[in-house]
Image (tube, rainbow, N blue to C red; front, side, top):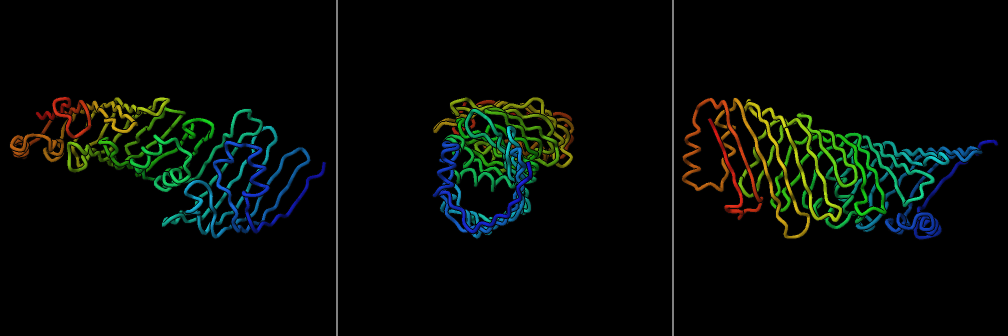
Length: 361
């Protein structure tokens, strides 16, 4: 059979009409995630269709505005433009790739990127697809996810409060809209990562490493590429200058999205400012339901450090006169060995239920 070549031009995208009806008939659960869209869009495409069902697509598109789902219907993408390629492989998959993709959203101008979409063909289950890019800003991705409204409420609440930021390199996101968590897999490298405190949990800055998520569990392999800072908001006023961390952190959430557990052992740290070396391990239990307070068990041993590094670990919850005395006692000296222990709740008024210990030799 001879291939078919077509030249297509579009001036409007309308998912409220026949195209939307077709999508709803093909994948009801998926199409319900899409807002009815009727917007001007300029597209010029070339289609090559083989007689065996294979097809190739290429072209250009642009739109002054593009409304999607949830809040994105009233806060559309703006000034969108991209080169487009696509394919259909019968019995295998179909997909689209947007190269040199530019757009703005809210007050953010998105740096040019390559974004790919792929969906298997012939799957008996609900709509599953993958998204991949050469880079993404985590803060923008998080805001877009929250705006679509596709995430379960506990996950959306946590992500909104944690406000993650940083840069994702070569991210791939696997989605199944018929699962409770929607996002079933993530593969990426993160640089400059940061999260805020949520329900008195530790806040982090300067995180880098390889992130892997499979279903309800995942891991972050820290590569020691950046100086990491940690804030325990119920015990310290300022971030602790920890250092370059290497090691693997694992995390898992329960099926009902009621509790998150994070653990790591061992972590190797090259302390900030020639502060020696640190070996650490921790376990964090964090309820995801309203009113739940987290509990942290953290142990860290320090070698060959100096007073400035050790002094920052004195918590503000110490009796003021004791804290002043300890700060004065940590004068000019060498510290061959030290330790820091936190065991108990993260809430401010934990009282005797929490132990914070600082040891210096």
